[in-house]
Image (cartoon, rainbow, N blue to C red; front, side):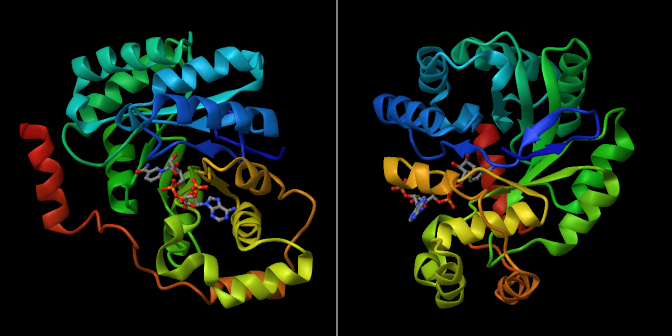
Length: 282
Ligand SMILES: NC(=O)c1ccc[n+]([C@@H]2O[C@H](COP(=O)([O-])OP(=O)(O)OC[C@H]3O[C@@H](n4cnc5c(N)ncnc54)[C@H](OP(=O)(O)O)[C@@H]3O)[C@@H](O)[C@H]2O)c1
């Protein structure tokens, strides 16, 4: 495994396993066990994924030592605010059956972000969390959080894949010392991702799949990846990305695929913010 060092010295695996859209307990537990068996040591879940219990049970059953694991979960916006965040953190920890978290993220840049962040800062100082960060924050929101608080986030997890490469975000985050983590490395298959001819032809040169080429491309850009799959063969395939290196020419060919546009949602569109606001009122 390769690692990226966060600015506080914590080492984060460059490759982890994500469990978004795996709400079924048995499927999630079985898949996390398969991932741990394949060699993954970093697992990315969230309060909103409703599968923290399954992740916790899989970790326990796997027998992998706690110090070898890197466990991330995320605080959902309905629990943003200082008091609610502290409570939700304890609930997540209990569901995961852990004494501490490796990384805790604010899932979205909406609602009482600053109140929630102060709770995370306190939990970090109390050594209940080894690193704290954010997700779906555009550079302006990251900058505001840095300006207004004591601790700079260590990680920002944002949509990143060949069609939405986040080059400017990456430079900004690097300047601030924040590690860039990708979500949806395969764009969840959107835009005919798994039929892309450029990625496929690059893969053929190395005897690797489109998925493997994509993960390798991000790792070479110092972007952390957390691909999701519930298919055992794909779980293994996505882990097998450390025995080759893409040439500069191939890195550039992938760079040319950037459409610089989300395949999912624009967090800056007032309609998106309105939609999230409705969740807060429910
Ligand atoms: N912070 C956020 O707001 C946020 C948002 C989205 C995701 N995330 C995190 O990022 C993780 C990854 O993103 P994602 O789950 O949205 O999407 P993704 O990893 O881009 O794509 C997952 C899809 O690709 C398929 N797949 C996986 N490996 C494959 C392979 N080698 N060949 C062909 N198909 C393959 C999976 O199918 P099967 O499962 O059927 O094999 C699944 O349909 C999530 O699980 C979650 O942890 C975070």
